[in-house]
Image (tube, rainbow, N blue to C red; front, side):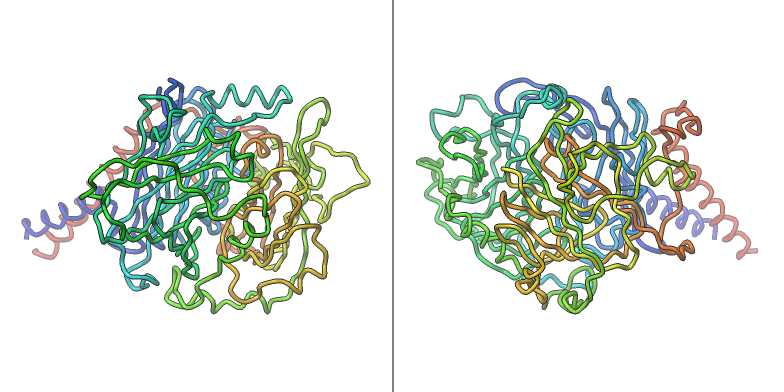
Length: 592
């Protein structure tokens, strides 16, 4: 019996260290060390933000219902927060990783994020949300896989390939931040990166010696290709020379399966495609991510180029790059590509029932919010960006923490439902007072000059319509009330609007923002405060034991004296030892 007890103790120890759970939902755990490294993605040495020494950072991978634990060590010289856009922190805005709800991790401190991948599948990513740090890196993919009992709506791919694409400046985030603080625009990026690497030398305009991305594939196989636009402000067109992109998923929902030769991916968006390697191997093929909705001749150098290499390829890629099928000078045709994204109503998502079984179009709308963006303007001597004439000022005490500890005057519940044309733009900490269990429509009206992407933390929403012009009530007759895609980040074209429907079933304080980093930094955001008046502990998580304090509550924060890595390891060892002792005692008692 002693041998049996020893075996079970070893098994339990292995299970804990391997990230498995013997009861309840499984968990996966990661340790992230966020630090500066020197890299030269465009041939110019610069400071970038790496995660565990990698740029871009490592993949977080889990399955529906898994618990995810990410212990983040901040090795930067300024505060840090990581956020997880599109990953719905159900009942848990404590883990959202934006400054309106969480205190930053001070330099040389750590914080452990702990959340559950509840009722989700799909492709997402993480990034640092503070101080324009995303412009220097710190981002990486998040993959949430189907449970075994929920089938994929397509044959199992032969492999997976992830592309992290985005516009890039050779100046680091502090320099770019200073440009915005001085009242200037950032101007044209220096290039586009594919997986942290610069362009293949497809013509003489590309300098020698730049490292580029090469993807190795086998002929005849089909790969699931996940693409994330993690850039600052540039919409990108993604394409693979001579290959079809079969769209199958975006940000947690399976789509109706449609083939494209190229696809526009806006800032903050994630997509999955199936790509079959059905071409001959006379040469390699270009992978291209190029700027959209700009003067593409002037912006030619802002093009990311990688190489798709067949295992039996006979030569290098050469010749001109493939061009997008649609011309941005015809915005209707460009918008129609996005309008073609529909929900796959016969497929299961995170649960074993069809995605279309939720009849959102039959629910009465309880409130309408029109969120209008305008070009940046000067307020109190500073360049600011606004929603409904308000440029958001983050409070010194995160709002969820202020509520928990009854800090008064931290923010105002007076964000207007409509633009206020009778008031000059102002800086304020103004929040939407949303109603729990409400079913609202949000109209993103873009009166700025650039394509913008809007995101809502803690939620996905149904994209029911988009059009050019000014939204009005009669537009509801054009809504897609059956198979609209549900996602968390949506583009809004300049001079146009996009309408979304949201069921407010997730208690907390949730960020609504533009994903274009320059506009977000200048204040184009707000929050929704959603409170269950009958809260009984079931609709919102308690404040975590490791919560960080700041602002009016900074005196509650204790110093981190010891190495957090050592303390975590000691804690795991103590737990393992305790369980071993329990098993030994139990076995001995049974034997006796």
